[in-house]
Length: 366
Image (cartoon, rainbow, N blue to C red):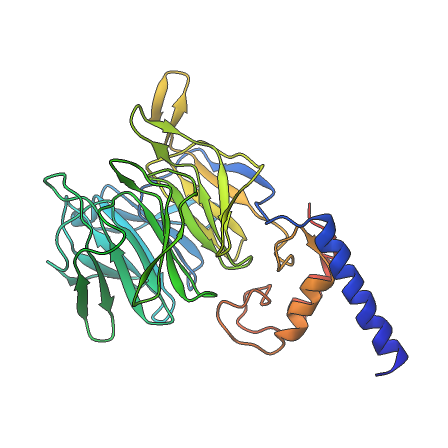
């Protein structure tokens, strides 16, 4: 190794160490903002990576948010009341479950047309947890509440390639509803948290396609909360939610990186009965609507709130763009892995533009 190369390597290592030492906590974002005074928010939400817009549903209409305005995309009365959406990056479509009461219809939205894929799938239910495992190519649906108000412990997986469901009955998770689930492609499993059964649940469960594993029993005990996968910092972000009974909404935000939950110092809008999605191209979370406190009591607040994460070049999420982030780009050079955090500009490949983004953003975030 030449002297210059060795010195460069040492300098990068020192910069990485000092950057990590100075700001060694998970990135929780820079600030919450009200991006719009209105929204059609609901508990069903997903980010469409292909079309770069956040989707939600209200009153049977699909709405899309591009960061500037909400636009109606499609109206179907049977969509009213859907509880879950999940983006399928393998087919570049969004799966939509439920609607029109406690049913179990499965819909597909391809950006231009809504298609009813299946009816009478796994039993009518509301307030399910749902995520798309794109590495195993399965849509996972768990729990929920029946029209008779009893709760499900069953879950199912939909295989889009065959159009078939696989269902299971009782499992270690037990009965649960109003919980949330996302897919973690780094650890290759679905992460499910919160919900309600007799009391607000603090447990975090993971599902790898074969087994449920209790990963934590000490997370935020909330239901009808907001949870999404941050593909840039490779973490689950959980915000707000509600506790029962004598319902109260919360302003706290938490992050999960596979071991334990960490509460952020940054507070946001106290919201429940809604959900949020991560807009990877603008590097911010979108949270439309929700129940929250007002001067005249708990009410629906229609604001479109956004959590600005900023600093997309801060690949490891430690609050500073430094040698560790540069190393991630160099180590991932040429990678076309869709979820690579080193692909800073999200153009599908780790290359010179990502290197330029790291160098341009060098130093503390914010």
